[in-house]
Amino acid sequence: MTRKNVSAIVSGAGWIGSFASELIKALRKRGVSDEDIHSLVTEEGKLPVSKIADVLAEIVRAKKDQILIAADVAGGWIEEMVAREKEYHRNALGQEIFSGIDYTPFFNFLEQSGLEKVNQWQQDFRRIVFLPPIKMTRDLELSDAWVKPRDWFYEQERQGKLMRFKPDGSVVKDENVLWLGNPETGGTIALVDARKKPNYNDSKQMWDEDIFLGGIIEKLRKDRKIQKYEYGPQSSRFGVSSQEVEQCVWSAYAKALGLEPCQVVSESMVRFNFISQAYPDMPRFHDGQTNTWIWLAEIWLAELFGDDSWRLHGGDSQYGGMASVHYRDADSHWYHVGVRPLAVLLGPWALEV
Image 1 (cartoon, one colour):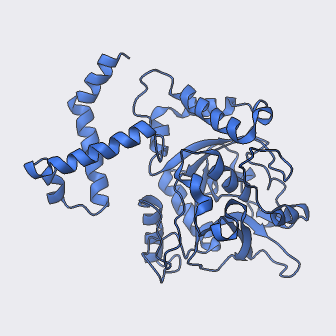
Image 2 (cartoon, rainbow, N blue to C red; image 1 turned 180 degrees about the horizontal axis):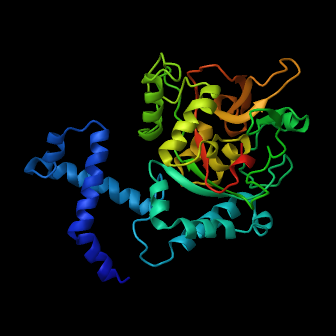
Image 3 (cartoon, rainbow, N blue to C red; image 1 turned 90 degrees about the vertical axis):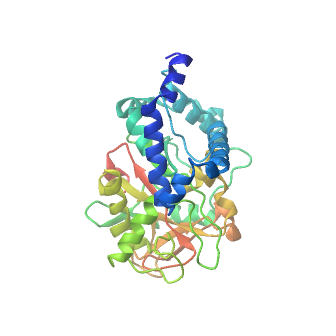
């Protein structure tokens, strides 16, 4: 497609109408009245439109927050996404490890999914990533700036105290707890949340523009399916227990995305640690600098308690940032522990949970 044709498409009524329609929907979701929206095309609205254009231009040029492919101008959007993934992995893992990674599953997935579906998935700060089948051991040599989980985590894995649920609800030792991507499928293609977790703010902290998942959580609280939050908006990701996430929130999130419930999980420690350090264009690249926690996928089993009622959580800057990892009651509702989903887009799903 020539540059002239692209310009004609962008200038066309169809493109303009589609863009305006989506913009109006987004503004209404954020509480902007129709009167204020209409003012943007009046004489008084010239300055706001100019400011909006400045913000959009900055996002497009810097490719911030999320990747949204507007058009397949050069016919190489798949190659561009794969190349970007390779660049980030090479920088994070080093050339020796990187050279052994096969990106064919990622390429094939994007090709089979198509541009329209990829664009749909990569909205609301969501991002498709390829997690290669690398075992993130304690002695794995990574970049000099890389922060690994604290030694306690690796000791729990060595002692067989990190567990997972089987599809039938029973609990078994998680043999893949250190694997970044599923070794049985040549890696894992995942839809992740690129947002940075917020700093603590008197229990009222909120995730940026959290309309999608925030709306799901708010409805679940309204329907009394999860516990009401006492310290802030009912759309808050904080004050949700790990059990509520596993039993209710992730299935509702999956349904909203058109996925199976078993496809959505909390991030494991190694995935949380990797995604928040390997992708410098994601806001969550600064996760280790914020003083809140994230519920993680691992069940922690210790002789002292002898049951499966404990979950790992990590990421608090006051306790080591990306190295921090600890455990809490799975049914506890902490005002400084939030939730973040990971949707597995390449199965088989049962191997992931």
